Amino acid sequence: MTEAFEGKRQRPITAKQKEVLAYVELFRSKFQFPPTYQEIADYFLWQSKAAAYRHVSALAKKGAITYRPNEPRTIAITDKGREVLAA
Image: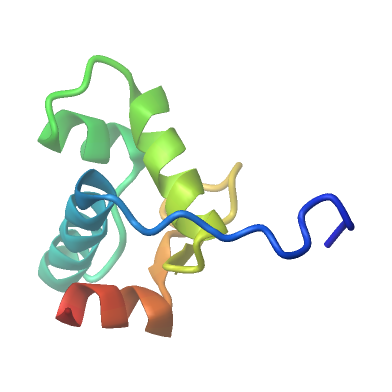
């Protein structure tokens, strides 16, 4: 972490990000693998999968999920993400 970011508070997970997190969990429990960005975008009726990517990226920065950006179906919910869902 660079000095410019030290001490800077992280924003809390938004309501929409929590919805995305819940959808990832629902999809994974139903199909035994995580959704793609396109499947997330389709579920939320977003015009572009870029919106899904932005939410997934934000959730990763907040520690709620992990993923590998250039590989499909790699979204995994972390312990912190499970705590968010349980709240």
